[in-house]
Image 1 (cartoon, rainbow, N blue to C red):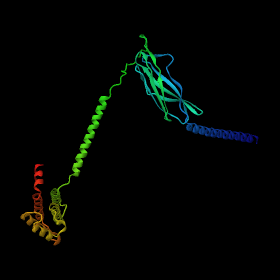
Image 2: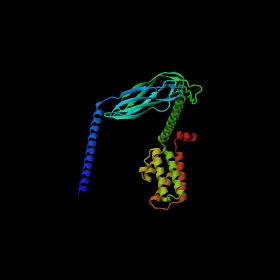
Image 3: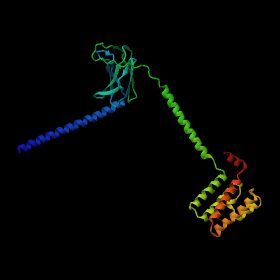
Image 4: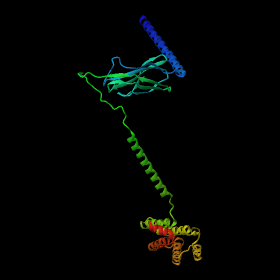
Length: 326
């Protein structure tokens, strides 16, 4: 019994300790959250704890060293960008960066590190350092001037930096090449768009439409893709549509008799042989469509040939000259 009682006491103490620890953690987290919220809403600014400073033992030619600056950031503010512009005679060895060093109640401490190297002897003038933060605050600082000391000639670790021309290489040829390439691409795009637009905008005259339709119909008949009876009816429609558009006739809305009557009264300015062909052709087509007479392959081929000839013979004189010239 005593052993069990002792174990229960130990267990109770452990549970009490865990409860107190959890409660303390919750209280701490709550207090930290409240503090973070208040600080982030307070508008407190970033401050500089220490300006960039040189190493205490001086700088030698070709030696790599790091300038460090320290910043105090209130909770809710983060570092964004660190940039440096070294003076002539010195250069960056790597990109400047921020490193978090400590977290304190209500703020954090960050170090800005700028790795540099001197490539020329003598006095190196001041450079510029800029630190930006998430609260849209930017702090400008100076990279201190320093003297680059020569290395001893008998030094065992002689590592003289390759002198870099402080003047930046002109990028004008590159920009000019890019500009020319862009202009060429734009000109090509404009040309292609205009060519496509002209091609799409051109409306085919009725005679071209009719000839193309006749050729397509002949191809379908010869390949066996269309019955002869249907081909004769379609050829009739092609001819009627052409005459309606070419001579402003009502060919598509008249019976064969009405249409032929208009031709007899001089409408359409067709020659006598053309009128005879139309009369014979349309009458034969009506016999195929309405009297269900069987169509003949030779009849269709002959009719199609004469239909194409009728279209080409009725092309306006000025358009016919243009097409022959083209």
